[in-house]
Length: 194
Image 1 (cartoon, helix red, strand yellow):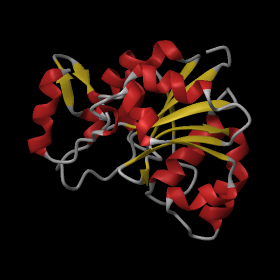
Image 2 (cartoon, one colour):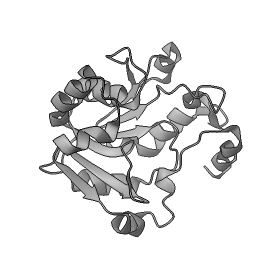
Image 3 (cartoon, helix red, strand yellow):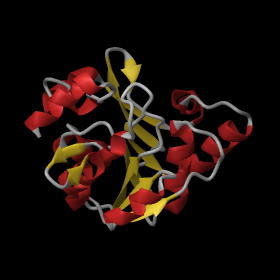
């Protein structure tokens, strides 16, 4: 990848089903879920940002960004991360997606030339929290937030989007493990494979 890019990890969810903040879940002795993602993916990027309002995030030693809107939704996190990023190109991932394949991330970054977003499609749906965004998406996201339209995929009709079909995604990640997210204590057992 020749273009510089920022890794944006979203850590702002309420974690109601998990019962505790997901970004603090342990993946190995002394390591949290966010620290795992940072370690797993940061070599692809010139900087890493963690977006969330938990004061404990600052202990990680990476740059943290607070939400710029008083709304709890992923679109606010994406917007806040894009505004803070030092690069035009970014990759956004949710903190509860620990199995993202670096090869998939490289592919998304590579194909993102001349578009506002490069978005995988899995099972017929966009995967907006495993997506490349450019700063050029900021005005559209801001307008959406100002209008109270909070669905991330709702912005795509106003952006230049490069869709990545499931067929292409499966060539890189046959089991689609990049899109597994952890929502319940039972799903935490998946972490034992990290």
